[in-house]
Structure formats: C-alpha cells, structure tokens
Length: 165
Image (cartoon, rainbow, N blue to C red; front, side):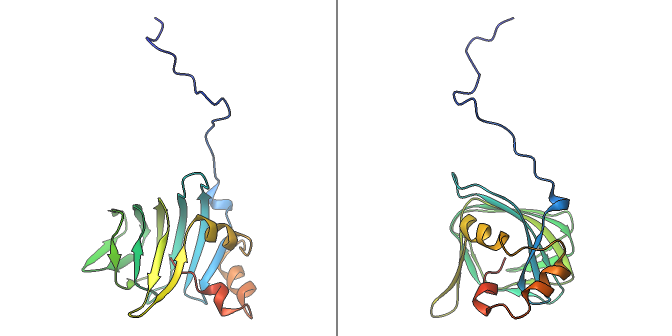
C-alpha cells in the first residue's frame, strides 16, 4: 500500500552519524582530576555530546545552562545542588538552570548531551564558556587515554585547561 504522502528527505545528503566512543580520545580539563571524551559536535544546532570522567573530590565551578541538557550517570555519584545523582540516573536540565558547584562524590563517568553552551561564573564575573566550538578546539589536544592526556597536558598553559565540564 502506498503512503498517503511523500516522506523521502528533501535533502538526500541526510544520514546517520556513527561514532565509536571507545575509540575517542580524551582531553584533560583539570590536571589529574577531570577529563572529557568528545563524542559529537553539531555546528548547525550548537548541540554537543561528551563523556566526562571526574575523580572523587573534583568540583566543577558554578555555571548556567544557556540551553537544555541531558545527563546519564554511567558510573559513580555526583552532588548537584541538593541532589545526589547515582549510577543509572538520568537528569534533564532545562534552559536557564543555575548550578552551584558540582562535586564528584566518587570516581564518576557520565554522558552529557547539551543543546547549547554553558556559562561559568564566580560571585563577580564570568569565568568561562563551553560550547560546541570550544569542544572542537579541545579535540585538537586529545589523547588515547586519560593518563596520556594528563601526560600531554604537563606544561601547557593554564588557560587551555580552564574549560570544565
């Protein structure tokens, strides 16, 4: 039976994107404490996806979501505001959400899909910005393992390590 309307894509160059996450390299964000595995960036939407690995005790600074995000805890525990996120938890955060510091209560890995940028701040100023463009810049300095990323980051400029997840 034929469909009641044409459903083929208008643009025939549309296709799925497969990313072999296990083959992705890591970027060190905080020496010996935090790393990022960049999975995908979408310049057409500003959306990006990454796996963050934080050692117990790592604290990400306060930030505001300038778009919605999705988080899935792969392993470990995070303290976010007044909640504890544990292995297997899924969290949706709407556009505009403000965070205080986010702390890894144990070694933690989580999948983070963000529909736009994050804005980091202190009590008196903006301290950082993270978007798909910064993720692409970080990808250029990635390494096969977190340990290799740490070794490659020794002696690099502190400003290059200022971006946090």
